[in-house]
Amino acid sequence: MSSQPAQPEPLTPAQQDAAFRPSRTPATPWDELTRALQAAGVAARTHGRGPAAGVTGACLDSRVVRPGDLYVAVPGARSHGADFARAAVEAGAAGVLTDAEGRARLAEQGLDGSAVIEVDSVRTAAGVVAARVYGGGQDAGPRLIGITGTNGKTTTSFLAAALLEALDRRSGVIGTILIRAGGREVPSTLTTPESTQLHALMALMREEQVDTAVMEVSSHAVAYQRIAGLRYAVAGFTNLTRDHLDMHGSMEEYFEAKAGLFDPERTARAVITVDGGAGPRWGLAMARAVRTPVTTLALGPAAPHPGALAEEDPDFRADWEIAELVPDGLGHRFTLRHGATGRALRASVGLPGRFNVANAALAVLLVLHAVGEEHLDALAAVLDVPAGEGPLAAAVPGRMEVVGRAPDAVVDFAHNPDGMVQALRSLADAREAAGRSGRTLIVFGSAGDRDREKRPIMGEIAARAADVVIVTDDTPHTEDPAPIRAQILEGARAEAARLLQAEGRTVLVEEVADRAEAIRRAAELAAPQDGILVAGRGHETTMDYDGELVPLDDRQALREALAARAAAAPPRAADPGSGAPRGGKVDES
Ligand SMILES: CC(=O)N[C@H]1[C@@H](OP(=O)(O)OP(=O)(O)OC[C@H]2O[C@@H](n3ccc(=O)[nH]c3=O)[C@H](O)[C@@H]2O)O[C@H](CO)[C@@H](O)[C@@H]1O[C@H](C)C(=O)N[C@@H](C)C(=O)N[C@H](CCC(=O)O)C(=O)O
Ligand SMILES: Nc1ncnc2c1ncn2[C@@H]1O[C@H](COP(=O)(O)OP(=O)(O)OP(=O)(O)O)[C@@H](O)[C@H]1O
Image (cartoon, rainbow, N blue to C red; front, side):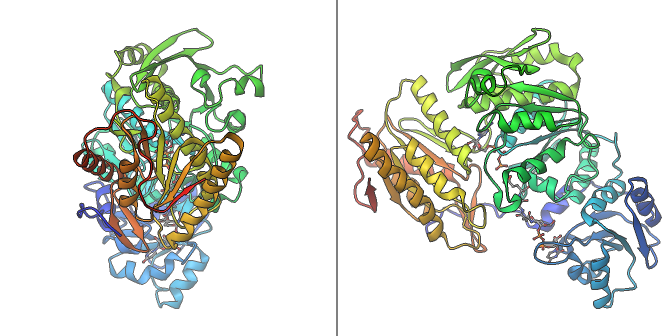
């Protein structure tokens, strides 16, 4: 397994937890915690003598406990947090929040004298208690924007934060790539952190005088109650397509998990994209299911399936609709129109792909509702700037990130079927608009310990849209990577065979286990007029091979491969036949 030079070590859980905490947390008296639970309608029973000094923090992991913390012992999929209570107490935990089973486990370890708050649902109670410990409350601030959906959360959140800054609002970001609280920034480990960490972060953001924070909300976060005790001024929905079925079981359950964000108790206003993803089915269902006030967004010419909304429901009129869409450089210029007033917002987004117009439009509406509709003119003014300028020109790390031209080389985080369809189509559209006519090469794999059924589907999508498909490793976690590649290859080869039969089109399918090697292979095979997409890992910089973290940044690997290619051979003239594979394990189907 080849790798790049060592990069900065990822933060340890303790370092990351420390980075989330405010500089000072006043002690909360023990009794106040049960009072907060009662006020939130959560039944709680206390045992043992509460700590005289009160509680000065809260956490869900024994390994990051600080003296004075409340240790929140949740029943997990693999173990019960109470099994680690001794380590938590030894680290200085002031008390334990757990359920009846947790309390029994404490007794088994001789910890029955500890101060315990017992509840039925530990995760729900954790959010309420953490809000109290860290001084949060309904209106404590910062103002919160939530974003959920299968794809587009990170991009939308970066664009929304850039818009807030353009409006002179100090912004915070919580998501897959990083956590930013005003001037402080740390890389993320989860998309949405645990509730105890989120409430600590809210306190940190108040210290940093953050006005509005933009938060990605994964379906895991809703299902695991990580967002308990938070209230969103506005929350947005991008789309729902196949992913995470390992956790949710069915699309209906996945939908319900996402819909949980839009509970009126939790979110004051919803902005729902009705026709993103695979079509209007789930977006319309979301707009209809939501019980909090809703603003709807229809994507018009930027929809992945233009016209599908009118077919699905001819009478449906969205509150806002994308009215015009014009390619502009690699990105687009667009107009967002309000149906009731006719008010039009003109904007330009720099990222390639029509789906990034959808993300940008959602970001605009989320920011509008967060800052207040009375600021519409100010928002219109920061949006209406020449192409390549303004807040929506911002690049997002590893999201349709262009790392080379001739061949066009793009790194994208697409790691589920719809993400791949969108990324491949965007690359093709942008290249067509720029008059580039070569082949498309794709390098990708699929992460281990995650939804297995999507693997052959992704193989099939790649073979349908690309001319050269190089299947490699994604981060395997604890799975053997070879069968993962085999499952993807099965889909790719079947589709390649079908295409040869039906259309006489040849797709090269190749397997290169080592990802850096696979990227070099693509650079070697590509002609200058071709386009390369390296999909699935985006901004990520390490791959987890059963606990061994191997450094690999796709963007750096692709840049280096292109540089090596340029150094090895003078640029080749446009030649449709060039780039034929030289050696290697290749299927010509
Ligand atoms: C599948 C999943 O989400 N699992 C989450 C779940 O783990 P679990 O139920 O298996 O917990 P467990 O290992 O049984 O441990 C039980 C408890 O003991 C604690 N513990 C454990 C060991 C120890 O030494 N000390 C200790 O205190 C754990 O912190 C936990 O609170 O509860 C843990 C603690 O609350 C989470 O950290 C863990 O997230 C893991 C790390 C994870 O990888 N989650 C991913 C899948 C995730 O949430 N992803 C979404 C984004 C998905 C996407 O859109 O792509 C995200 O929001 O990041
Ligand atoms: N609105 C969209 N519709 C469909 N695909 C999209 C959309 N936005 C982004 N994508 C694709 O999905 C990939 C991930 O985008 P992004 O990181 O913004 O989404 P995400 O929801 O944060 O994903 P994750 O939760 O997995 O981190 C992109 O690299 C792109 O290929």
